[in-house]
Each structure stands twice: as structure tokens, then as C-alpha cells.
Image (cartoon, each protein chain N blue to C red):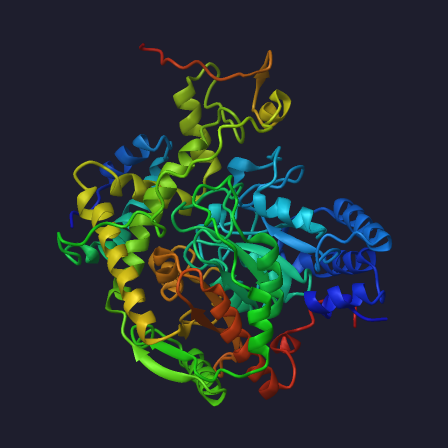
Length: 99
Length: 505
């Protein structure tokens, strides 16, 4: 099991869109290494012949009748929005400076 | 006058039916109890006194008109803050959802309303249900009513503590790796995790979709069965919901209460004992097994060799699912939005918001999940964990050929001190050693109090697991054990808990 480095944690935090401060990185990186070490014990436990289970129930293709049912009103859907403009979600600009 | 807060839900329903009291009186008694003790216990994040009393008054009007909605009509309940409640704040114990008021009800909450149960408020929990102590709540820990310096378990410590402290007769919890059962064990209360798919997850803010289940948190086995029948059953809004009727759960609990377990085969799981298991917890467990034998049950030893890998499997599958689920908290449509600077981009706002809005444990698990799902590591971790999940399910299958139910202590220890394991994730994770396998395989399990451990006088629990869809077995065996223990104790275990500062009986 490769140990997870501080740089890797910073990279993963970036992928997960979380700004971690230096102090947080110092704190979390060693803890994540310990957790990874302990979960590494499962490598090699199950052979190639064991099928994976993604779900406790073997359900596939659950359909319902194609009928209209009531949904949220626009006011309800927008009720928790940080910012609303003209009955729409108002969001920060999407492109970065360099774009 | 009776102290209505000390009654079970079944007793309250009977008292209402007999005209001895009203829902308003019962609901007010619980609100008074909350006002008296919740400063110390902190089981609630939000109390809706006005709403609960209005719903209670409606229940009383229905009773007068003879139009009752269910046997529990008028019996109040507390709801874990991970379930969406129309018009009531739903924070999941996180700053990122502070002040969010959902515009819809979770299906289980809708069913409570349709059955006429007044909702007292929302209970505290580890942030997004990640934890075993409620210490990861962004709004402060809940305290164990048995000893306010100790943890009430987690993630549903608020629901368990509310019931244990007589602030509510009933509560809803959710169980992803033990979050109903482990708090039940350490607070001397009852909690049941239903068969996966047995109760709707619609409106439950997902931690790990393939593991989460909503279930009852109560002081007696019968009360859990009564509540389970209200919330359970098929829901077209949850595509993983099982489209068939629940087994008769209340009947099973009543049958069990007769105390006869003749012909029932009880499997003791070899792997869930040994080093790291507190002696007092094991002593109470062995006594419980002996009582089941005295009630006519046959005991068999069963081995589930893959259970030793359950914890590692869980801590790969859960973070992987959680990291995907929590991607929706992106500061765009609801919840917190933090601007790192004026004119920042959406991505910068997202990063700053998620840093400010999520606590340490949530960050740990998101990063761990992101790692486990990364290309190059996927097969070694997540893929391998999914295979081991198959092995664990096979262990259950084999065990249930030899036994009708499986038993183990619910948690390896009694409640530990607040703060003791807060910054030691592995020590914290070990609390769920015995409860996790059921979530991985989707089977039901109930935790029933087994007594107080000799070394510290704190409650311990016994877990009873059954095959998928056979929740009724948990209730039958649980009620039989409960009845046998009650006979031995002479009074409910919670009578031994400290009174806290409350209105006297």
C-alpha cells in the first residue's frame, strides 16, 4: 500500500473541490495514511472468481407508469437558493480569469 | 396526574384510546421535559413546539370525531435531522445546510403526518451521519443521559438520547453502519435497522445509498414494531424500495413478549467476540443468550470468516458513495455560499464553501472516497471491497442455514467519554465492528438493552440479526429477550438512569 502523501491529499482535495488550508493538510494527511493502511488489509481477500456486489438487492430496471405527478413550484424550488434573479438560480461566473 | 413522558408509545396510545388524556397534554408534557433537560442533553437541534401542539390539537379533534388515522395517532415523535421535513429546518448536523428548510417531506415523514403523529422537532447527529458519537455535529455534541460526560453513540445519538431522556416516546433514526443500533446499545434503548429496501429512503439525505436505511428508535421492542409498521412498505419514489408487504411486525413483537422461543435457532457469531470486547459487555451478552436458551431457544455457534474484513470494506464503500453524494453541495441551488473574494468564479466559490461548510470527518471521508475511486486505485480498493461484500453476504447466507437469527453484542464497549476518540478515526470506526456487516448484506437487525456493564454501570446492547425481509424475527426474539430481562430486573433498565433536572413524576 503506497502511503498517501501531503501532496496527494492536496490533489485529491482539489478534485473534490475543497480548499484545504496548510494547517488542515498537515492534520488530515497523516490521518488518511493511517486509515488507508488499515483498509489495505482487504487487498487480495477475494479472488477473481468472486463477483462484485454493488447493492444488497438484485433489482434492475425499476419502471413506473409514465404519468404526470405534481412537482415543486418554482417558488418552492428556489426557496433555498443563496441568490435568486428573475425566477432563476443566480450563480457566480462559470469561467475563470484565464479562460 | 401521570407523568406521560415515562410511558411507552403503546401505553400512550392505550391511554388516548381510553380517554385518560389528550394528545395536547401528552405533547405538552414532552415539550416541558425537553425544556427542562435538553440544555444538558442537547438531543434536539430544533424544537417545533407550536407545530407539534397544533398537530396534537388536530389529533384530539379527529379522536372526538371518530376519524383516527392510526393506532399511534396523537403520540408525538422526534425526527433525525437527516430527514427532509417540509417547513422545518433540516441541517444534517452540517454548517453547509444551516437554516435550510426543505420544500418537501421525506416519505417516512409524510407517513408520520398521515398517521397523525405530532412532530416534536429534529434531533442531533454526526455531520451527514458520519460518526459514532455525535461529536462530529457542527452544532455541538449530544450528551448521554446516563452520564453527561459520555457519548450517546452515533450518528443518531440525538434520537437515542431523546428517547432515553424521556424527551420523546418515539424517534426516527437512520442506520448506514450502525447509527440506529449502536446509539441504542449505549443509551439503554431499542433501535431497529430494517431490511434494505424495507423503508423508503426518499427524502433521506444520502450518506451511502447502498447502505442507508431509516428505522425506529424507541424504549421498547413493541414500540419499534408499531413505528416500523407506520413508516415501512413500498414507495414508488424510491426505486430501491421493495414492492411487497411488510411481514406482521407488531404481531411478532406480541408473540415474542409471551416469552416462548421453543424451536428458534440462535446463532452466536464466533468472530464478534474476543480481544477489544469489554468484559462487562460480554458478560451481559452471555446472560442474554442464556435467557434465550431458558426460553426454549437452541444455540448454535456460527462462523462468518469474512466479517473480519467488514470494517475495511465499509470504509472503502461508504466514502466512495459519500464523496459522490456530497458533490451536490456546490453552493449553487441551496445551502451555504461563501465568496472567497468579490467576483470569484463558481469553482472558487464551490471550494471555499465546501471548506467552510464541511467538518473534519466529512472532509476525511470525501478525500478517502475520491482516492478509492481514482483511476489506478479503483480495482485495488473499491472493486476489491465490492467483492468482499459478496463474501460477507455469502457468510450470512451460510449462517442463516444453521440459525434463524444471529446474535452478538451490538457494540464492543459501553459509552466512552466525549472527546476520547474524536481525533482518532480508527478508534472511532471500531465502534461499528458488529453492526456494519448487516448494512453490507442488507439484512435487518435490532438492538435491545442487555443490562449494565459491571465495570462502569453503563448500558450494553444485544444485536439480533435476521435474513432479508424477515424483520419479524428480530421483533419476536427481541421482545422475548426484553420480557425475560424485564422479569429479572423487575423494572425497565432506564429506571436506573439518572433523573436529570426534570419535572418530577
